Image 1 (cartoon, rainbow, N blue to C red):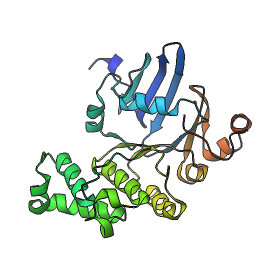
Image 2 (image 1 turned 45 degrees about the horizontal axis):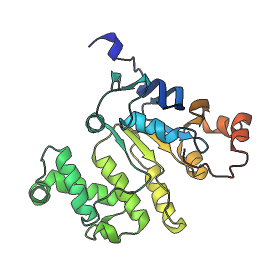
Image 3 (image 1 turned 45 degrees about the vertical axis):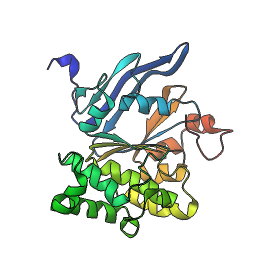
Image 4 (image 1 turned 180 degrees about the vertical axis):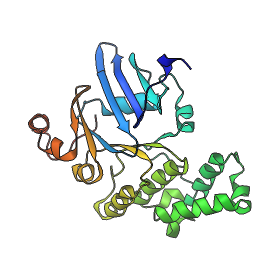
Length: 262
């Protein structure tokens, strides 16, 4: 493989280099560079219109950048299709639930785990015949506090449980990079603590990029933060640095305590 299609990744698992995304006359991201370190808990924040969603769509292949490159574990994936990025270990959760309403959590996870273990679409057979599938499903159900509701149709689950199932699905894909897109969005306060604790307990070897407007979650979860404003990186650093940065405080004046999605 030529040098132009690789990147030195001593401790970086995902790297966006000089990303520009133009929609007609609008520049949504402007020469944006971001590096996700191995094992990081990296938060991406910014006010409304900052370019967070655009950046995630670029990283996951939903959008193709006007300029710039994206590297996953040193390999140029800039033009790679979204499903191939998932196969390479980069998985995203969504702000809005995208689940199979008529399947149960057990059936949903069995389907994903079976595909991950190359058992194709025969998950209903694998669930009974494959001890590996059964064991992995049991692990995920317990880890994400879904055992008690594993046989209920997803459509009747409490919203917090649906969010937990979504993250369980993402983890069932065995990601090395997990993009958490507003995991507590819309979750009632009474269901948030269980979800927050579960997110905090995600495997240390999974590198996580968190997009979130809940500042309590951002500061309790992350060990590094990037602040976007108008499609560019305003600043980045450890949470304490960001909390005390005068420029960041200025950006959020008038936005209240919460940061809206952009």
